[in-house]
Image (cartoon, rainbow, N blue to C red):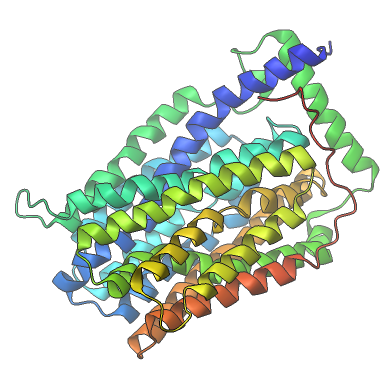
Length: 435
């Protein structure tokens, strides 16, 4: 039984309100637990006497651990159970993140960051595949924007929270230690909640009526059949497609700058502004808060117009140009900070349309493998970008030179994605079908 237009719109709203809040909350906690080391660094570095190069490698090595289960994680969501897989991820990474509070040497720091990456591996590509089980193609970019909005939101919340935690000294533990403990344990609780709350596929959703389940599964099955009619593509064939490599290299270049910007922003802002740790983290929080606007607008506009590629490129190029503007010599500090805040508006606007590109052009199995493959490059960039950035800072790279390096990464990523060939974009959303 197919629903009429009014009922279908109500169903989309119902699915969005049931699926997105939990997934966004999970990703919010995930991103804070991987990125809070950038906040803790302001005090942790002094207590442990770690150099910038040690921090760069420690931050980056997380992504090497992440790579290990990247493709298997996406395939497990496709063929097994998102609910069980995500619960396992949450519980293990929460415990490991909290354990970071007790590192004392560089080797321990590297080891715990590596294990954190292994624990979290497969989470993001798994969510991208999970969305294909619930959202038709034309709604997917908006769903992705709901997910990606968790990145700036988690950091916007995490920055001022971390500023408060850095000043506590309970039970002979430093503030940066409590930061890891308090921000890590919620993942364990959410992992248990996920086992009872998350639903794998529409056919298992008791909160949908039988006609709603039939309609949603029918729409998704029609889309899958339409893609299959264009020609079956195996996993290995998908990895030989030019678009897959262009997307992989495009996100690699962009994330070389994007991840380094996320982890090193507090350090850079403190150096440029000369302010206190608290004011530095508040300014950093404002940067991430600006990112909320860009993510929401990008996902909405991409769905309304049906365009993915050029929305992605616009975010990449805008971020590169604004970062480059912040490096103009002779500017007052307030203007440099203003350029950085404007960068925050666009720095996270490109992922929602970007991640709608692979799922729009491949069969389900090939898309699952390709998403994991592309995200492998995204995370390899996280390792290399942070390692190189820390290494260069340890050898005298100035803050403005660092910002120019990040700008060039965004611009190169936009150039590569501009070469992606998109033969078919989803139709623009009718004006009345909103949710």
